[in-house]
Image 1 (cartoon, one colour):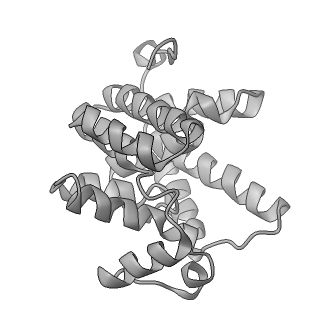
Image 2 (cartoon, rainbow, N blue to C red):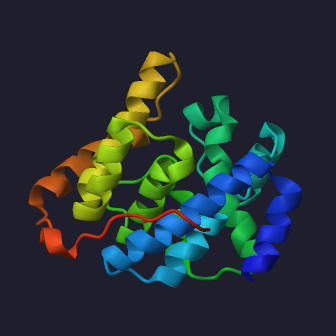
Image 3 (cartoon, one colour):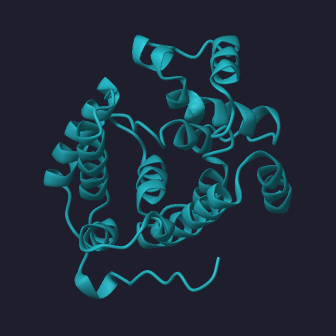
Length: 206
């Protein structure tokens, strides 16, 4: 299945995007082991999260409408936001993925969602923090936090994305705010693991 998906991706996304996707897959596996989440599900959701990333706006809208996805005014004006929902549609229809938790994690990787599962949190965080996203002190600190407190990592990822959107004068979807506030509350309630249980990320090989 993995090789089939990679072959499909090679024909439907750019080499740079495929490198990102493989980075997300790898980070999802490592985070899943750290936070005691099923690593196979994490790998599958990570590998398929951007299946529709390069679909044109008209195709994203048409596929979302056909599947009765709720298209709010922000998404209607910015169809690229629908690529997460449409990627889940492709995963289900083209690759036969039936696990609803995996499909939901794919759907949630861009905007997140209040009350989302730990699997969804992992894919959401890995999408933003996989090593191909760059390397600076802020990202390094965020990656460290991703091992210690998953909800805090979601909140930081939201803050990081929101700052970018504000600075670039781009629209902000209300769900991103709701996700951030939920994650902030959750992080304040959660208990961090002991430091000796936290392992550093290794990115030498995909």
